[in-house]
Length: 175
Length: 102
Image (tube, rainbow over all chains, first blue to last red):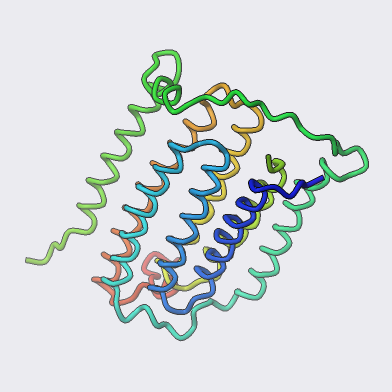
């Protein structure tokens, strides 16, 4: 069923990095360490993107998430010093939240597993197409009038507006 | 290649961990980290379905790129708000920011 080849091993490695670091993000009491775990987690997700033959997205993940968002979060943690060591890390509803999240995971797991392993499941090997669109196709689709050029322009506008808004919000008004 | 359901399982686990961080942590920056984890889980799902369903058209990857941009914008604005709140109240614990409570 699951053949043990090099791709499976690398997938397992990146999955363990991603999920282990995510648990590190949630459970760590020190926010600085949490942000470092977050960077590891995002690196694992970039590895999964490479395995899914999306190398451009993996590069963007490293540049934007690790390079920009990770550093931004680390800086914010340092700017709000004194808040890195709150004694009560979790709020009062943490136990019931954990139960709800576990139930959510099991529901999702049933939804994922049942179509494959269930009574009417298709255990036959799904044929994965070897023809994969390249990064050049992604670039063309971003500027093609019939595809995503309008969304591309809108998202650029959104990013510009958000950056200006962030500067305005964080500016110190007291002179 | 690794079957599709394994990717979906990893993404589901990542989403649940992220939602636990959002719902249970008290520090606003930790909550923002949880949101980032959830967005990454969604991105894994989008790319996995793109690879296994329609690898010859670019819809999945283009959507993932847009989600990445929106996540970056969300992080920038969210952290700006958190720093402003910290400057005014000396706290980033979400339960202590209750000016708009009814």
